Image 1: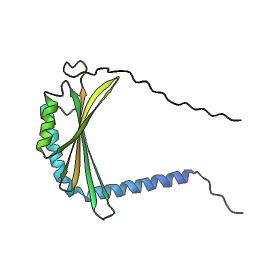
Image 2: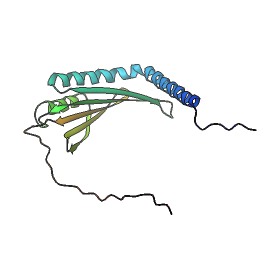
Image 3: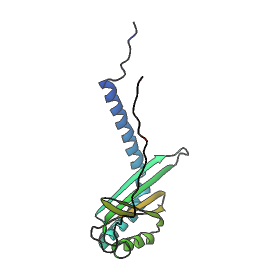
Image 4: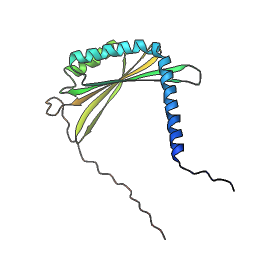
Length: 171
């Protein structure tokens, strides 16, 4: 009689975890092989973050590198940078100063968008540049300070949505 494979097992879970670890090690090796390519991009990003700290807008910041080998056999390198802090104004002070400084490093403004919810309000600005062989994206998130006189979250209406509801009915 043939043995039927069990659909789930502890050894299968361990094998899956080992495969995931092997994949992460490969990703790490790919990233390490591109270290020289990332050096100029990190130098520019560090200069931007130092500038943000000097003007008082760098409560949180993060840089996340990624790389992958394309079908053409050429590595594609990206560096995603986020700078976030609270601001009392979007027209004066730290926010416009930082945005202007980012432009001086050769970044192009891609756009901005607002989001205002019951508990928060923010404006996000996006910039991109290619530094060497690295595509760099800088995201600046300005959270509007509670009690700010120049920028406020204002309720502009009420949105009512009609949502279909379902249930299972068996005959």
